[in-house]
Length: 233
Image 1 (cartoon, rainbow, N blue to C red):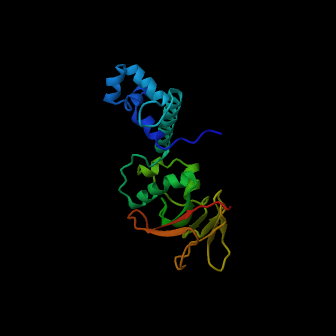
Image 2 (cartoon, rainbow, N blue to C red):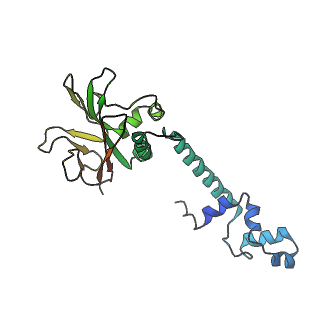
Image 3 (cartoon, one colour):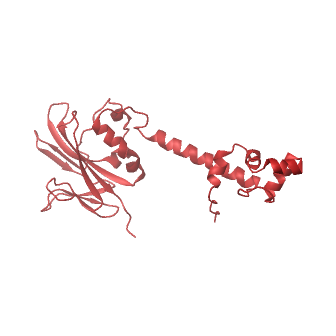
């Protein structure tokens, strides 16, 4: 098993560009006065005979340096993968989606979005969208860029066309739909099996869940339900 990284070592490898810089940081002017040889002073620091800081061999320094760089590149790549990254968002709804994008992509959160508005035909529609599932199956860059509007579809968790009275419901990888319930429409999280109640009159949407009403001028009604997923132990 790989050894745990000693406390402070991450800071060491990111603070100093080279191993020589790290050694020099532990050499005092008094050391140079008595030794009169910078290279010898570096060797004594490497061996642990001089210096008050952490003893770190060249091979370990280089390995940690590479690990730190790989971690930095990985974080940068993850940030670039976010469709909302770098967008100057003015729309309050899109801001809410951006705030939840990373958590929904990583699985820390599964958000259900209720939207009621009109489609391109002028028909009133409403529905519940599994945000995490849509993120995995659709490119959200056009939404965050303002080129498209996010609307419910017949393939989403729940969909209703008020003019044609077309109604559909579909399970997703994250939620099971419970349509016939005395409490109204319910969604059961497949990961921790918690029930999410979307009834606005309910005292609470459920365990580890919150309900947020979003006032967005682009939509008739938007409500966001956030569920923090927790694995069963």
